[in-house]
Amino acid sequence: MRPLRLALTKGRLEQNTLRLLENAGFDCTALREKGRRLVLPVGDTLEVVLTKAADAVTYVEHGVCDLGVVGKDTILESDGHFYEILDLGFGRCRFALAVPNGADFFSGYAEKTVATKYPNVTRRYFDGKGMDVRIVKIEGSVELAPLLGLSDGIVDLVETGETLRENGLCPIEDVAEISARLIVNTASLKLRKKEIEAFAKRLEEAGKIQEGKK
Ligand code: PRP
Image 1 (cartoon, protein in one colour):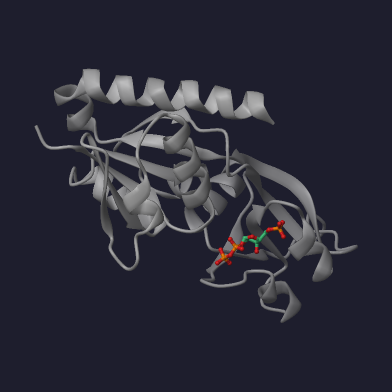
Image 2 (tube, protein in one colour):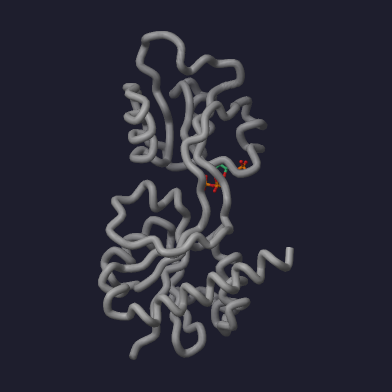
């Protein structure tokens, strides 16, 4: 049988996932020495594909990858035709609504404008409050939008809060807690249930060991 294929989000989650796989006993030599290769064998039973976060979800949804490691932020923004089976515990941060220091976002009757990389998350959040806002999608540093006068606030990821502080913004409400999750293609989970459950268990156990070491 072909190896299980795992879509791994490049960047922030990559190193933690690699460490977790190694703690779970997988040989990650090819991943550590990847050069510019995008499909990498990890032992005989696993193959890792390095992708952007949103693409990891796409590959898992379409079944060309059985599994994916993605942030809950990406999951919340997607339509979610896959299973989320494990919280990996790293990549912890939160979605927050942030505004310029001292601004009273919720006062007045004029419609507010919110900039974000996550329009679906933002739409749902304000719908939940029964509040109409105009949402502007930004691709890069969202913090710029209120600084330039384009928006009244932002919904974005906050980890240390440093980016907000250095740009005169402050978080006023938490929107959602975020961490890395293991996702699975719906058909793969049926067809290769035992292997996938064993893989998830291995990662879960290794995660506990990692935590214990701290
Ligand atoms: C994220 C987020 C904030 C920053 C928050 O961006 O969009 O800008 O991190 O981190 P902090 O609270 O520790 O300052 P990221 O660095 O992932 O880059 P991106 O803009 O490419 O998403």
